[in-house]
Length: 136
Length: 136
DNA sequence: CTTGACCTTCACATCAATGTGACGGTTCGA
DNA sequence: TCGAACCGTCACATTGATGTGAAGGTCAAG
Image (tube, rainbow over all chains, first blue to last red; front, side, top):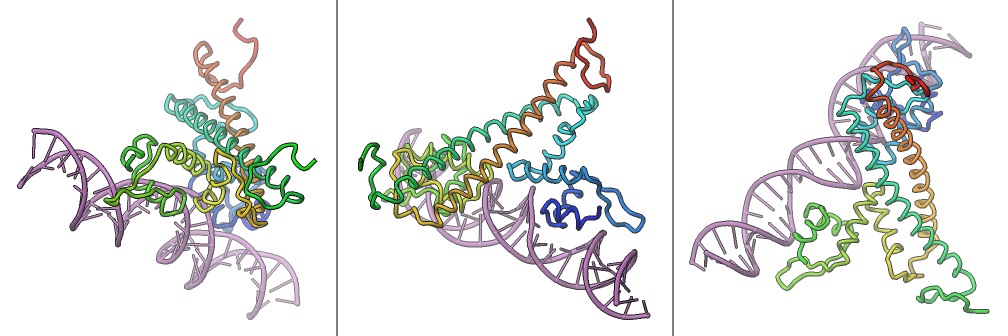
């Protein structure tokens, strides 16, 4: 498929698909006329990239870890340099931190929402913290 | 405490503490001489802000949701406008998406690392996927 | 053959989060 | 009273992910 279709199917501006290529995240091959030519796998690939970007990883890092995440788990031991291992471990730990932080804050938001929504209709708009067992 | 101490205790450049204030995320009061004066609670506050930023939330959103996350759960119903509720629900869902994406990718990295590290010493540097039960 | 919808590259603009430095005031100990 | 180590504001630079538009090639349909 060409860039327009990939753009539609992934909800990603063409500009960014070219940018990801420029950053070495994806490598499309070219039709004789110079147009980029993507195959099906790029749909998932791009979604994954977007997810990682949205999760806060920079393209520099994504480029490094993407090959390790490929589906047919082929271990390229040539990639497994000590630096690479260190990078991966570091990134894994950072992601774990991020996850716990996100979970904690999301749960706080969810809890807040529940409280607010529960008291929404029925109880007047007071300032009080929620009182269990009131208004029987 | 003054900005320098807060900076040290949170590992955050002074510049950024001032930036967060400018963005309305924290509000320090001032000593007679104009210096910012922070109390203990700002340490946690700043850490939380950094965590949220690192998790990919923009200051604009953090500013909105921070008041809902305060420890003594005081519900300010005046803040609970329909738009606010919608924002919070939206953000909660985005965070959930981010979390699942992060978890998936972190687990992939972890799995890769395990595989590589398990085969690291003992088996020669082949290209093969890991074979269970080999080298008895 | 022309038109419109694609595609290309190039380049400059923007936005948020940060870095950096200039310039000046405050506090405190030697 | 001087200098070091703080603090303040202001303002410009940078970086990464994007937006946007210009100038031009390709191709299928009318």
